[in-house]
Length: 541
Image (cartoon, rainbow, N blue to C red):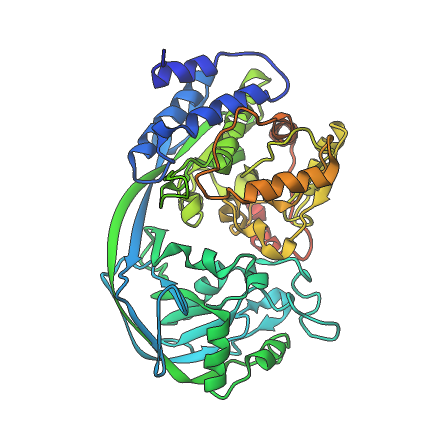
């Protein structure tokens, strides 16, 4: 017999006093959220309403209070959905470019047509403007109306001993200046007509097929009129860029080396960029879910626990004919972890600070729900002590360590180490810091506004499993990556969620300290977010 949705939520949420996260509860929640009834939890679909209703019912059953604006459970998130027509015409000089083959572009402007005619092109190296590092790739050049061509990652990525960039941007660890989002934002701030990034698999952290997966489609939040986006943004294939630079009499390989120098200046290119395409524009109203446990002594100060509720919904059929991408680990397991944290905190002593449990929409479309929250915060970001985010946990059992993404960014690292030590575990830094995972999850929306944050994401590297060691952890990671964003990211009764539950307990232990102590985590010296947080210091006195 199938229970009605609300009844099922109430059954799962039956109060049980416990000190640790329960693997079976995590599994039960994922089984529901990743079931066909939820349709892959895509924003703007019937699966969204079912997801929101289920989440609200769970939080209400646990005895939490609505945490959204005006005493509501949800924060509305207006989105735009755009798709460039497959008939788009693009060229650099006399060379026609085929969407999806030589070039992959989108727009996030709500305009029915893209029309760029003979825009002058400028190579801007890595396109970094970082006063704190004494670095400026633009050197005052007026780039309004121009097409900017960027290298992916940041100047330190390929830097050699003796290069000015060496050690300026975290060595191999990607900083925000290396993210494609930063480059598109910088182009928009400077009034560019288009922003094109030269794709390299090593620098981007993913192949051309990932870049091209959008097929001309994009999403964005509805923005203030002053917060404009660049009209056309996207990528040029590596071999195509080499050829185009050579045709312009430029050596891209030599320019890569030059871009690692503080003396680098933008290089004007002789060919011009043109693009003409119709754009289908759709407006969608989605929502974040927000719940809270009010603080008893400092209710205006908050600690936030978060995950994203959305997944990819229906997609092209795989080899077996399946079309549903259920997002069981990404991020139904993160949702389950946040719900379990809510249960644990509600069963314990009331916190002095307000604890906020946030489940975001639109993460898979560009961190959109969390970005909307960050631009329309319900709780002052200056008084948000920390954000702790769960996004993909390993399902292969207990581990001797916890993999930390973005190690060295803030004092939260030491708090995590303390919590891990109490479990008999150690902290292992992520394996591929050059991929910039720290900038690719929802916590980053508040990070860039100065809120110290910590991310647990199993993609950061192989866990040292108690059975099988790191080799077994790598085997799990390889297997999961084969299902990443695909139909096979599905709930499995054979999962061993004891390790995932232990990771949830780490956040519970950190939350106990953050919620009851007069403690303000800080950014590390040299972090690109330190100055932002310092700017609001007076509000925390």
